[in-house]
Length: 75
Image 1: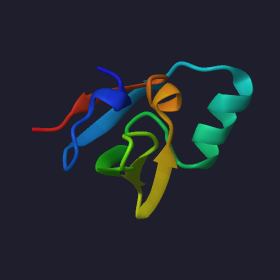
Image 2: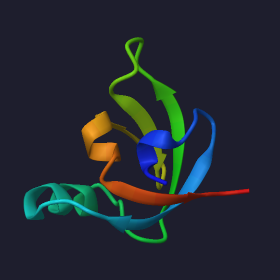
Image 3: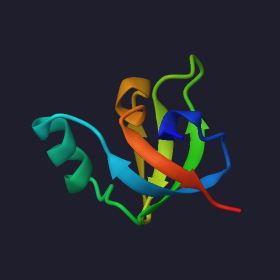
Image 4: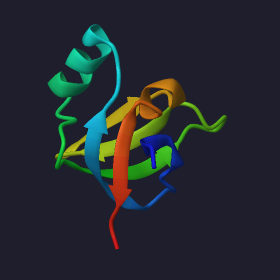
């Protein structure tokens, strides 16, 4: 499943990032690496972007960015 499919309040582990060099570099700089836990904290009123807790920071990602991150939902 991809990160954009993760429901609010749920947590998942990153399995892979499938993007171009510059986008991939940005995600790595934000701490999105295989094995990282990510929690869907909340969506904006229109549903895009979505706020995710990554390592102790809350970061907003747009749907097209979240679609590039493969995750496995916890529990």
